[in-house]
Image (cartoon, rainbow, N blue to C red; front, side, top):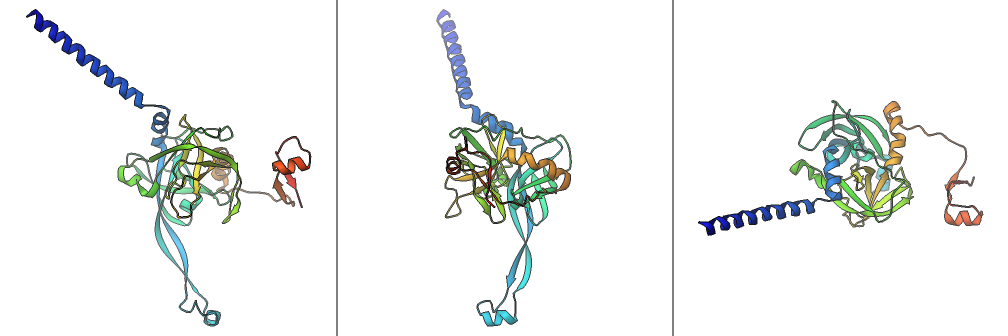
Length: 292
């Protein structure tokens, strides 16, 4: 009986050690990335829209002579589209890209867990490609804003969103992880939009990710995912994000007036580059140069 008693104690000890080991393994799987995703995911939205697209129809479009007498007919049709967004306040304001909701007749916002809301467009800014939506309700999960002016090239970044409509499969945002590959990138005017001070990341951004958040390791939003560079249309690890500080600067105007009003100075300006700073013997490359 004494041997059986010690054997039982030994078995119990082995079981306890096994449980403790499993607990430690579980703890080791959790890190800053999993914590950031867990913190922000409840506020990441899938946005499904019905948009009006215009197109031209002309049976003689290949013949300039007939086109002169029979100009193209402009028609329109409804198409389905999807993108991403992020809830930025408990009263239901949602930030996304303008091109996600542009010309939309209906906008349905789905949150993790499956709750759906019809959204109203509060304001849009085509220049920065940002749009502000409003959900009817209160006490929504929302994200905290980070500081996009305080980024370090090489630090971790997380993209959350609805690539290829995958949100509808499990009612949760998809996460991809990379680093901050670059910052303060200026592309100038592109298709009516001005992309400046952009953040570059190699976190995978695909069709449907537009309007979703880019996070830092604290789970705070540092940007709104907007565009990719690709020769094929697929992700190649070069994505671009609107800095959240830029978005925050225009949110009050979008809430108040539904648009951003920009004045005219009567001058042509350009960004002061390192080369210009050296030419004019400036102490640094900040500010703008009036060139006309």
